[in-house]
Image (cartoon, rainbow, N blue to C red; front, side, top):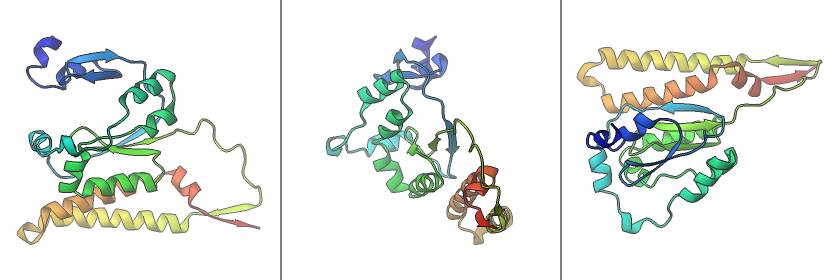
Length: 212
């Protein structure tokens, strides 16, 4: 089935195999690997379309000076090293897709600013993922005399919700007066920011703590 699948698309054999694997050739040579280290993953797809043929056709393979450390990545996965995986994230196709669609870099920066240990474009794009280490244990205690004020964070979240609603309204009812691609990119970034901030972990990390 996998041999037939590769005739449909290079990713099909892996999709049939699933799990963690090293893909070689055009995607048909697969070596199964242990499960990747546990972590949280946020996936974000901007509102743009990317032609895989275009990306590979415009990749300057001869001009690439730094290639991802594949052997090191495999070793890190086998050793269960989350730090090793994060430190070896790399995708040469970003040199093409990110230049054509700067929103990809903006999403990566947004994920990193909000705590991602690493962020990378997936394949030829435009989808981006961010890796977050899940805290193994919560803070054991907090100062009993501390008062946590989340008003500023709550206002920021409310502003983002209003921004999302307004951008969605523009896309739905703005017609030809709206720059659809630009508005969709702004909406994507706003939704990602809201997703990252509208949770208790972010509120606690960015709350104003006043000692009484």
